[in-house]
Image (cartoon, rainbow, N blue to C red; front, side):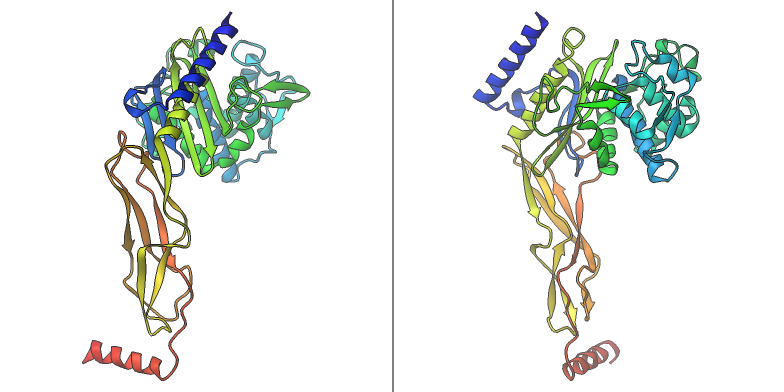
Length: 413
């Protein structure tokens, strides 16, 4: 019966999406909290009650994984480092809170990352936390410090997994109560997920897998929007599901299509306790909303000037040279928006002396976006470096001599 209900929901959503794109004024995500963010720029494309902290379950793993990758980057361990499974995480295997067997008691970091991200294995997550920090409580302190570094001050963290403390017995974080659990707002989760994708995009090599072989046993992903999943959608390559008795079912998705790369957060999907797959249906609607209501438009392409941007060249074989973008600068243009979106060139120097070398930094081109949703961007509005377009040689003698003579006269006489 539940399967029939799910299929009916899918057909309804597909039908109405085909008949008429959902517009901003009549759209809401069927969940308590939701947000969609462009990954490269951090622009907020949709938000719905994003400031209220809520139980997030194993979505917490995204922060745990970030700190694991950070430890790898710092040379403290590698994907091939061996992790010995302590008695505490081992005691959780085979229970309702962890679904992989850790009988070997020794695994690589990569294997545990796959178990934590794909199969949502809490015991694997705790083992990783212990490997990085020595103990889970010490790891929670590192988690808190990282959130503070990112400007997140409203979160509540009591463990590395998102489990309710009632499952952890005597292993609770000092000062936390028996029923405490991790709480983050949708905005907090978006910040964590975006930072993970920007700083460690290799995480998608794992989260894009629908199943994996863990020491002879195959486990499937909890993300049913991946290829081969029940709600498969092209372009979805992660990230993480979450569930909590008090916070319902949730899902963070990474979606890429052409130049678009967004992360969506759906917390506490409507009727999720009875129909957990509703988090995927809600995510699908949110992705459709972004695609139907925003156009990703290039303001300047890599290697191109912006509105004839250039700089004067003294004593060169040419009197000026183009200032061009070192990378693409894109902007999301909302359909029907009246606020302008442009860019401003901020030059560091007003002229150059020949010879001039291609690629020399001249300043930056900063996006000026006044069509903002909520606070607009998770961080500051994006910018790209503006650089010299080509090499310019010195003027030949005697013109070079004459140029220097005229400068000397103007500056000294």
